[in-house]
Image (cartoon, rainbow, N blue to C red; front, side, top):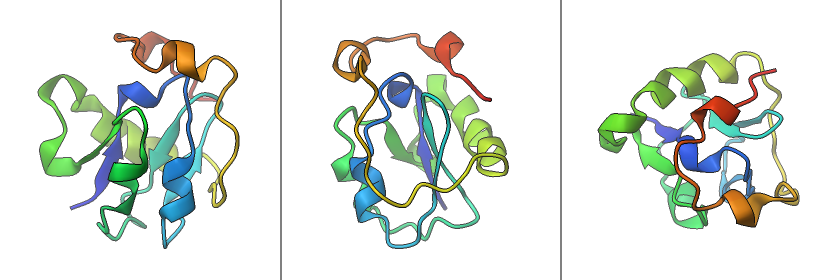
Length: 108
């Protein structure tokens, strides 16, 4: 089992989760973080650190977020690893509780 970053991260990109990851399984895109399922060791440390509750165990990903399992796997192959904390996006607080952000996901 792996962990999955879901829609809540889009346009926020808080990196508290990255700081606690012991294996550098997070990758970074323009406005989203993803978890490389090949690198994740299922330690659960990142879950509690996410201020927008965007990270779920693969088996617990909400039904309406299932597509993010595949999104994380695909993006992990093309985005660079992020291994240290950075500032969130400038409008992160504004977008933190916004629903329906899938169309805002920048994959390049």
